[in-house]
Image (cartoon, rainbow over all chains, first blue to last red; front, side, top):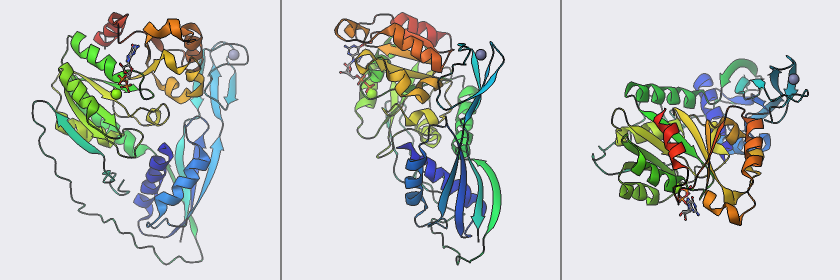
Length: 109
Length: 256
Ligand SMILES: Nc1nc2c(ncn2[C@@H]2O[C@H](COP(=O)(O)OP(=O)(O)O)[C@@H](O)[C@H]2O)c(=O)[nH]1
Ligand SMILES: [Mg+2]
Ligand SMILES: [Zn+2]
């Protein structure tokens, strides 16, 4: 369950910047192709924050569509699964975004 | 894992088998930071702190350091990923025999030294990383394994990741290439079921082709599915047991 390792990395990257200040909310941006299940991450976040300055903080996850560019018909399109197929039938598709996994902001006391 | 330094004190164990003897690496102390964090009095007012930090930035930095270190030694590193039992260790045993370059192996498993012992018997040096509950190797574990393995310049380093088709795809180790091994007994629908893994692969070894007469695995269907996830991926069907087509695998490695 890599969501626990991800949750621990979230906690570590926040603590590095907030030190011992109390954190009430952590906001994440998660691309649809990041390979992370938001519910599993939320569950693990509680475990990972226990005993830290983030204990009790809530996790707000904003999921983002992935975007891709078709080299055959030049269209840009959104996708929610990693199947790189354009509506025109071409698989000559370049992924532009969708793998992001970032802490965007936190609420600190 | 220690949240402050990522030292993994939850217990990945690193055990080296074979010469040269692994030099001891004492657990480092936590100077400059502590593991106790006293929560500040939670006030009623909060304010927003914009951060924009990549969650895996720390792993990625460590992976980049591993990559530099390996490049400096002209070592080619291959991260082997698969579900348990697809034949990674068997493939490595054959590869050690066939390789023109010296081979060393970092073995990842939750428990036991079995695979490192198999590699050792096949004639290569190996270090076993036991991740305990951990389902994948990360760049920190590989850095520690490299410290004790001390692979020779110009060698071929394999990292046999923990058997799992999900988590290892997310963690860059500093490898030169990612290889996914799938065996024909696992079913030809696995590319679409585990898309992240196959999307990340540079090459997919389809192993146990000696069993194709007994199972429904359609290599063409599998290859077509993998190509929709990863148009550039190379597919190499082999049998690690009979040795069929292992020369194709060996040629690919030699070209790295
Ligand atoms: N029939 C057949 N069995 C294989 C082949 N490669 C590996 N095996 C068997 O599959 C089992 C698991 O192999 P192992 O190398 O331990 O898999 P790992 O968990 O991916 O390292 C063992 O019993 C191997 O003997 C192959 O090409 N054909
Ligand atoms: Mg194995
Ligand atoms: Zn198109």
